[in-house]
Image (tube, rainbow, N blue to C red; front, side, top):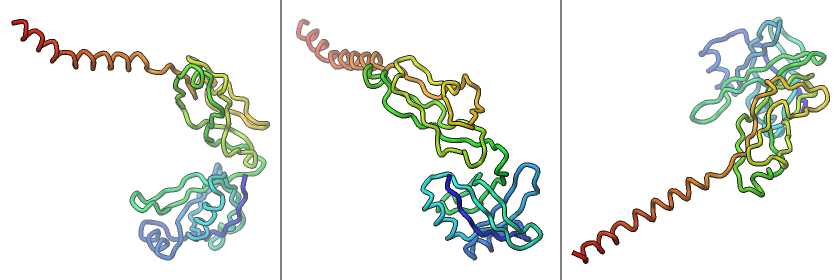
Length: 217
């Protein structure tokens, strides 16, 4: 997991007006909250934060937030919980940070990434369907993976990969129900295609049949 240190100013003013003023000043309003901790309103520099997102390139990031101002100053460790973006220009409008303790486990969602090509797809021309793209795990903050990879190369037609089939890394516990369906391998819809082609053939034959009937008369 990538670790980043970032300055954050504690906000004493809240509300839409205060948030607009911050954005005009190239600051992004946000909040820091966590289990058993009082929420702290804060703001971070827009350019610094966007540069961090670019450099991390999709990696999970552990933030060391250096809080200044107010009575909530100091250093806090936090994960990025949510980004709120403008629906038109996609600019970041608000950030939710989740405060963590490095010696206490947290629950987070991570993407499921299939590896290889399923036998049912490669050999039997079936179709793979990713039913659930993320699973919930529990582990220490620094053990959080960017993703969970699963080998699907042996899955055949009719096979299903459940959450309980995954063996996570050391110190990681999967919180989803073991019976949760993640990936299925289904048969291709060959019959439906054949029926459609047959109907098109019959429809195309009707004018010729009608012409033959007319000539007989």
